[in-house]
Image (cartoon, rainbow, N blue to C red; front, side, top):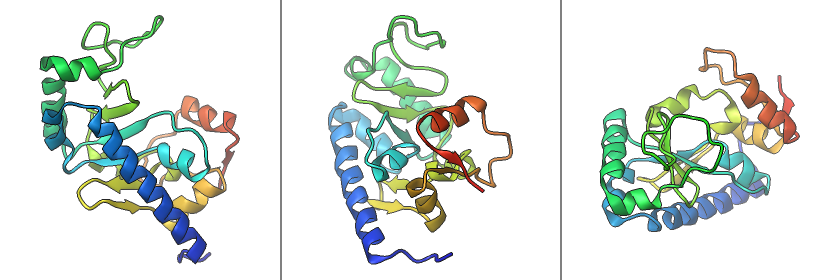
Length: 189
C-alpha cells in the first residue's frame, strides 16, 4: 500500500482543509469575542472529516482545547458569561443526559452551541491519539491552520471502513459501531 497521496488526493485534502478553515472561522464568529483566546491552540477533529470527505452533511464540529486546564476554564467562563451562555444550544424535549445548566446543552463531556460547534470539556486535544476509530482521527490545527490526515485515515474514510485505532485500548461501543454501520460503513481489517 502506498503512503504517498496522488495529486488528485492532495487537491481533495486541500479543498477540505479550506472548507474546514472557513467553517471554523464561521463557527467562532457566532461566539462572543471573549471566547476566542480559548481556541488559539485548539483542534477540530472527529467525525466531521468522514462526512466532509464523503460529501455528506456534518452533524457537529468537535473542538478539543489545548489542555484540561483550558477546558475547565472555558466551561467556567461559558457558565458565568450571559452572552456566551445565550449562544449555547437549548435542550430539546426528552433529552435525558444530566446537564450542568438548566435548559442548556452543557454536559459533563461537552458544551454544544446553537451553530453545532461542540467544545469537548471532559478532556483535551491529546485525547485524539486514543480515539476509537482511525477515520475519526484527522484534525485541523487552529494554530498552524493545517489539516493533518494520514494515508490510513484517508483510505478508511474514502472506503467507509471502520478500523479500530490501536491506541484505543477498550472495545468500541456497540452504539458507536451501529451508528457507522447504519450509515453504510463496513468493518475493516
